[in-house]
Amino acid sequence: MTVFNKKALKALREAPSPQKRRTILVVDDEPSNLLVLQRLLEKDYEVLTAVDGQDALELIQRLDDPERLQLIISDQRMPRLSGLELLKEAQTLVPRAKRMILTGYTDFEVVVKAINEVQVFRFMMKPFDRQEMRAAVEAALRAYDRAATPTVRFPHIVGRHPKLVHTLDLVAKVAESDAPVLVRGETGTGKELIGRALYDHGSRAQKPYVVIHCSALPESLFEAELFGHKRGAFTGAHSDRLGRIAQADGGTLFIDEVAEIPLVVQAKLLRFLQFGEFQRVGSDRVEKVDVRVISATHQDIPAMIEKGTFRRDLYYRLNVVEVTLPALRERKSDIPLLVDYFLKKHWKRGGEGRLAGDTLKILEHYDFPGNVRELSHIIERCCLLAESDLIGPNRLPPAVLMAYGAQLNRKEAPAEKPAFRFETLNNEVLKRVREEAKQQAADEVEKQFLTHLMAENGNNVSAAAREADMQRSYLHRLLSKHDFRTG
Ligand SMILES: Nc1ncnc2c1ncn2[C@@H]1O[C@H](COP(=O)(O)OP(=O)(O)OP(=O)(O)O)[C@@H](O)[C@H]1O
Image (cartoon, rainbow, N blue to C red; front, side, top):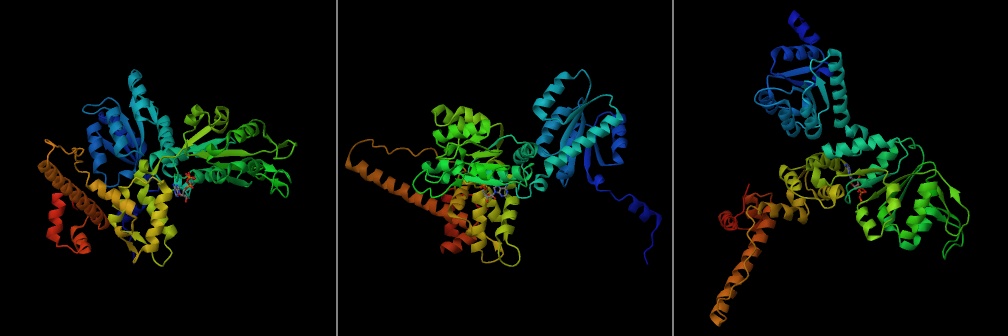
């Protein structure tokens, strides 16, 4: 039998609502102000308090899950650490938490700094109105939610790094409009994915979505591919054919690698963007369609304009909104999330594939010139080659292992090797220098061998010695000789 005593009932009544799980930190050196804020907010939120900036910083550092801190409200004038100084530090410690500052009318300089340096969500002038304060807190928490849940809005775009979140915020804002968007980013950063997201979230989502990959087209076919052709317009044109633009009528056209379009075709695309008009190859008839254009490039179009290989007027037409995707090396904190996502996607056997801790660590050291696509291929390869559901570093491609080895060994990069010195040009000196050269070459070979060996074995000396069939002590000597750090 369950007995409900008074205490249990009270606890039940006081169980935190989902809202209560939101945590707000309030900082003020004036105890009465602190109490007012605490009372105002604690009915709806979990409120932490600190009596000055330093106290607040220490509290944040002690949180076992700093992610749950969603908002910091700080007074500006406090001993030890001012509100601005605290919020600046908090930007690094809890970058996703929204920041609000309480300040007097005269602190104009603080307001300017807060805008420029700390990206404060809102200022509240003292003394504040309770109603306004509550509304500001709610608005800040809504902004937190919008920034924190890009994957809810875009389920196929994985990542939480602020740079990606910023990009996705922009995508969400412009998806509804018909404005042309130019998506920029290195190869494999997800430009096509963004094109699709713009389409899915736009008002044309039920209409056609047509893609044209310009890098795959021979120059002679661009025009016909984009605008279509009439029968007999050129050799091989056996019948009339719709171009991609006409296929996309009412919907969206995604032009991938738009910088590849030859200059003559650029002029025709410009006319289409200006007036919605085009002509098929071999036809005099002017056709009109209604198409939203999203284009993508990894190239530096302004530099192409300077060189005369891309039209400036076309660039302005395509680039009404510019969305830039960060390279994966600029958002390495997303690697574990992406790895999980791709493991689920590519693991085709029973159970669940996992990366061993070392494997993930090695991946995080790599710069991914091919960005997310490269990571996806690496995980796919791991899944194919794995012997068990725990995937070790030996399944990673050599380029990744070598990059890791090179970093381990970068402890103190030796100064550039001195050129050989021949103090006298005689046979004795030649013999001595030749010996030196042999030694240097042998050292280099040893070093490269060790780099591969240690990377393949996750920097584990015993495993490396076993693989190389060496005594552990001998391997140790070699490693110290070459100044390797081992785990
Ligand atoms: N944030 C992401 N989350 C999940 N998958 C991603 C993400 N970014 C890219 N991908 C995946 O990586 C691969 C490459 O993406 P995409 O083709 O969109 O890149 P791209 O920038 O258009 O490349 P390219 O310039 O070479 O055409 C795709 O399989 C895509 O699904």
